[in-house]
Amino acid sequence: MAAGTRGIPGTRPAGPEPSPAGPEPTPALALEATGTPRPALLRELLLVTALFLVYKFGRLFANGHELRAFHNADRIWDVERAFHLPGEGSVQALLMHGDQLVRAANTYYAAVHFPATIGFLAWLYWRRPAHYLWSRRVLALLTAAALALHLLMPLAPPRMLAATGLVDTAQVYGPSVYGATPEADSMANQFAAMPSLHFGWALMVAIGLIAAGRARLRWLWLLHPAVTLLVIVGTANHYWFDALAAAALLGLALAVVRPPGASPDAPDTPSASGAVPRARAPRPAEAPRPAEAPRPAEALR
Image 1: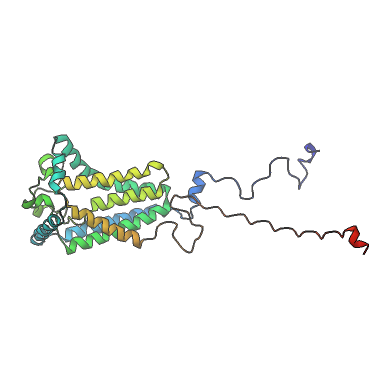
Image 2: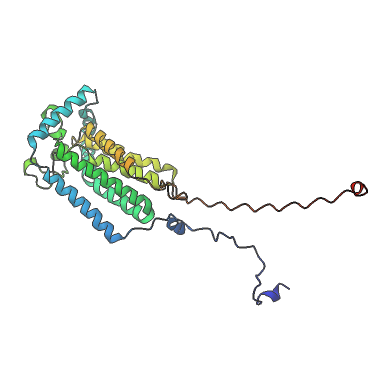
């Protein structure tokens, strides 16, 4: 009887057979099933801090090239007009319709850049370790290339160029992250307009969240670089070409750094959406067919 077999070794209680693949993975287990362990937190904090300090002091090292910066600004302004790009003043005119709007743009420029990038990396570190490593490497490569371009081509922003006729909205309406006198501003290099890391980082944040996300509305993250582009141009902190240069450098960095799931040595690596492909169960071997018995008519021959 079934009731009497419960205590007998080697017997199993009645019920559905357990799946040979084990229980369905919970979301937490699925995260660990990606095969990419979360890197050590202290090491990552030290690494990201070191990268930021190298970039910060590298920009300060590029100070002291005001004449070259203004000469390059004149050339960039002339090239933009030759390509018939829309004037930066048309975007600034949209922001100048109200004091609150222009102050909001200045605040976005000053307060969203770093926190958004740090929050992006923190979320990926906790929820998508593989995408975190990919994004951190892309951002590091983009920032290094931007620093090299800052050293090779110092560029005065359009708010400093008299030919543009633009207003320095941060100095007039506030808040401002730069000193009123660029030559005396020891906290930042105001002659490092190209490329715009405000736009480059914002674009990578959107690309990284779209690649790591699963929601249908994840494409709305593209609003972040779109708003950033309008802000950096409308506040006269960057030219159109600064954003184009940042996008080009980001494209090169994305081409160099292998995205998650693209390793040729791991055919079962997770896809960009984070889903782990399941192994196909082998097909059972077909049993040999029994030999057919001879027919009576054939046996009498």
